[in-house]
Figure 1 (cartoon, protein in one colour):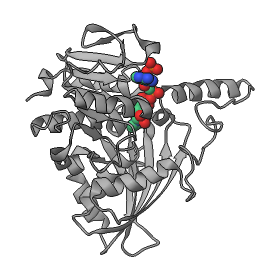
Figure 2 (figure 1 turned 30 degrees about the horizontal axis):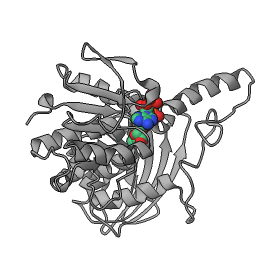
Figure 3 (figure 1 turned 90 degrees about the vertical axis):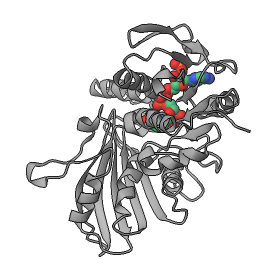
Figure 4 (figure 1 turned 120 degrees about the horizontal axis):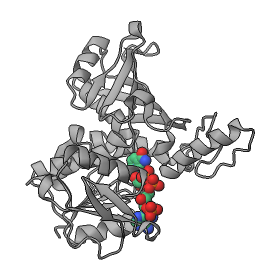
Length: 344
Ligand SMILES: NC(=O)c1ccc[n+]([C@@H]2O[C@H](COP(=O)([O-])OP(=O)(O)OC[C@H]3O[C@@H](n4cnc5c(N)ncnc54)[C@H](OP(=O)(O)O)[C@@H]3O)[C@@H](O)[C@H]2O)c1
């Protein structure tokens, strides 16, 4: 089966991730026009062009999925909860971008380069991880060949597009307003984001971690099949439009050299090493934006632990952090002949 021959429905086609999904379909499948673009009632009737064909966005309803083979949902979590099971029951395979089903034991949480084989046991719904978890596990996975990993400390610098199109507009407008002496007036973010950094993404748990940080902890363990791995994260919003960065500190069971780590990472599909301090070469959000790969640099021995490595990881959160990973799941499921809806 080829993805080219499948009917694709995109719920949230008008959003930041949805628009990136359409851009990637154009880039990877320039003849694919067997599409259905869906959003909320607000956007119903809007015209969008994909691969030279004009589509009218429809309102998402329970009847939207009868003719779809694959349904990409990149809307609000409550929309995923409502429409995901309906689409799977209608016979479509659902690839969901939200956190609605990620920790459901019956739903695989997949980064194809890391745990593509988990697609073998899905029952109509597959989730993609949080947009900072994906690049982290892409970096961690190949290094496990050198030595088991005992502990991960990951601190993130996340762009506003991780919070959707409204947050991107807020950064642009707030920057302009403040430059002209006006007030910040936060709305899409909990605090002023222009000329600031916010050590809060999502709400706080009783533990003191935010839900975004807890997602990184729980999701990394699930994807890596390491339920007891020690993971800690601090997730920070920065005034950058696109691309998330992670400062990762990994502790191994045995010492791992920088050279060995670089060799293993260089063999990992979807990873590009950009690491030459002599030429000031290291990954940055402005360079990673619009690219498919996870970029890794600043690889060095962790001065605080004999078995530790430190590194800097950057990826476009809308591409590999969301739309590309979802599309690659569809491609991997197609190759494994595993595109189907709910089977019982
Ligand atoms: N942004 C990222 O980097 C990223 C990464 C990984 C995962 N995700 C997840 O992807 C999802 C979408 O994120 P985003 O950044 O694209 O958000 P966004 O820019 O705010 O877009 C939200 C989309 O959801 C649609 N929508 C809202 N209410 C709906 C309803 N009742 N029925 C159907 N569609 C509805 C919106 O359509 P209207 O135009 O009609 O409002 C819009 O297309 C979220 O679950 C997010 O957690 C995002």
